[in-house]
Image (cartoon, rainbow, N blue to C red; front, side, top):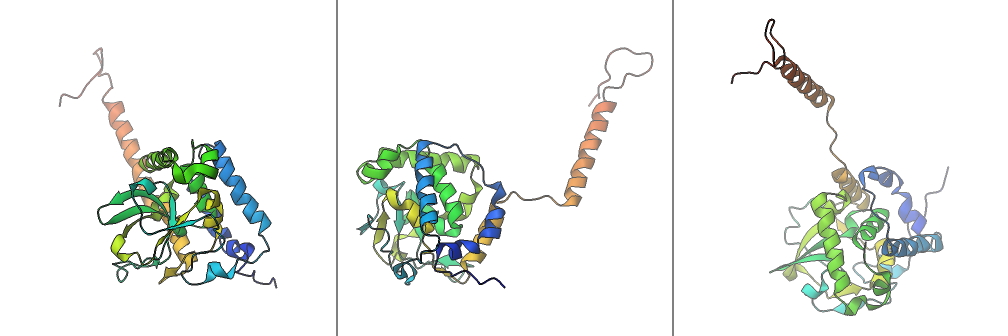
Amino acid sequence: MAENPDKTTVDGILSDLNEVNKKMRSLSKVDVTNASKWFHNKFTTLINAAKHAPISKTSSALNKFPAELEKSQMAARITPMHIGRMFMFVYDPKTKAELPYYDTFPLVLLVGMREDGFVGLNLHYVPPLVRSKIIEALIRNVNPKYLENDFLTRNVENKQIVKNYQILYETSKLPAMGPCFKRYLYSHVKSNYMHIDPSEWAKAVLLPTERFKKASKTSVWADSVSASRPKRKSRAVKLQEASNVAATAAVAKASTVKPAGLHGTFKDSN
């Protein structure tokens, strides 16, 4: 009997995602650009290098910011200038009693501001491999040299990321983003914000920092995968649609029948 994989290793973390990731067939393919390759290489390198290396205990400590993200900076607040950037913080939802589950330690890519808070993509709501696909899609057309070096002092790349997000959202090209979209209230943020440098985004999406309440992470991910898939029509619905098509075709055919002795096309009078 095979031994269960150690859940503190990357192999262990990803082992229970195998079936979930197989179901992500509806995840649309996106254009591969230099920035996408840059991120994908970082993500793949991390997985290959850490396959049997244990995740640091600092990552698994309750609501403790991971020490692995060495380039990250702490911020007391976020502003519109931070749109397009990634943050981690402690959160206590206002409506937690009504929620089926929630994440108390969100990993959020900020996409918009509200008067009483902000909105963003909490990547914890999908498996790590899907998180990487979302990031690869969002950083299309962004110069990777700025992601690697000057992202914290520039705003042009932020705007491109948000533009990519809006295109993906409006065209439904990346359904996996849907379950990640969340709104947060300033009054319920219970810590400072850990601003994650883009050069460490690949590491951030791989670390097991999600802190779900009322449900396991695999249950949450399974729900997200299900919500991302196109709804399948039942056999009864398909048969009814086929019947409707046949009836419409029959009516169309009847409307062009030429009565005996007449020339031209017969048309309904109504």
